[in-house]
Length: 355
Image (tube, rainbow, N blue to C red; front, side, top):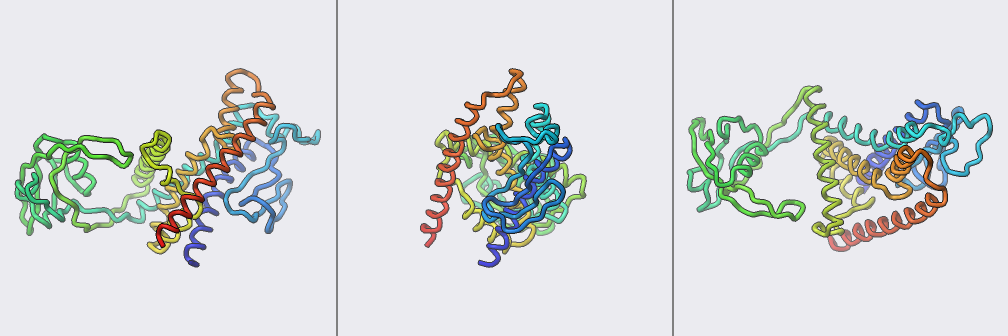
């Protein structure tokens, strides 16, 4: 229980801090006055004022905020602070300040994944475990413990490399270079086409030969530059998967029961912390990307809504009417409350179902 609490505080605290730091640094860069930098919402637990800014930790650790001079429509701004107010900035600067929060979360994910790649990731070997009878691998003579070195002359370093080559070659022969008991030889096998459902519930045709991995792994490490490149690609793939998942939930192909909230994050954070620091770092990277997607959704009160308003303002040459923004704000709060109720319901249902 203690591990779970500590891990949750670390995960939420770091990711919220990174997000708000993006807004804060962008505001400072553009010389916008920042009145409050808060981790958490609600009553202040402790804090300190430095210059014009109050830095504080607040009671409810489910978010945070940066309060800028003239941020809200109708704010009373002292004459000497008008030049430093958020509302007085060109729309390009306001866009930059709002976008900086999600951008910093994405950068954090890239850095976290890069650190994991440098430290070394456990990676499945392309080594055969189970061989299913009467399927292409069995008929071709593959056996448990065989190590696949190459597929059609291309090295297979990871199980992922082997699996992708097989899935992409339905009904087309593959030549496998196999290592067995320190001897190497070649085997020709033709993956059998099969219609399967992917993680999003869509039917796709893939090639299968009837093997599963042995489960043996090796530690794959990368140099810092390769790690950064791989981390950027991996972060983008996770972003794509997250966006597709949200679309599939809206479409109804993925159950809304899969959506989780703070309780699920706490449970998973505790599990990953027990698995080790590397697992916790990777988990934080994935959650950080989820926060990027959540925050750029065009829901009033979220960053995405403000970005949309500023883009419209840039396009038409004038701000969206205050009345429309106020009404949208009310709708946005209602939507956020509904989402929170859904995720808490799902989280509590999982706990009850697990008992």
